[in-house]
Image (cartoon, rainbow, N blue to C red; front, side, top):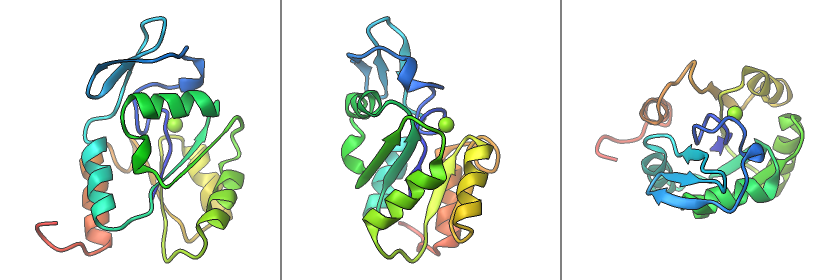
Length: 159
Ligand SMILES: [Mg+2]
């Protein structure tokens, strides 16, 4: 399960333009050194916990400055959910995906969630077998992502 960061996992549209260090304001909110707030999307923690419980491999693929993205993930307390974190300062997510897949090895299936349609198409073109979901379009909340996954992966009731 592969997640984008900006406008997908959190409400910030460009974490690279924020200025660490980040200060934890509440469970799901951090502030950068200029007081700019970055909020984790509602339900992210629950979704990641649920996916971990199902045994899913979790990854980040993001076009950003890596150390800032890592600091923000750490600041929000979600970094350790991810088995792979690929953050590079260019928009070629198909290349980042290639790196991710070669690091993970053989996978039966993969999901990719990103708010940017261009990124979704780039990955889809390179890897047509990857199931893509455009955030804020096909799915609008973490709960909706969970419902899609539950349906498609045939997850039993109660899980
Ligand atoms: Mg994004």
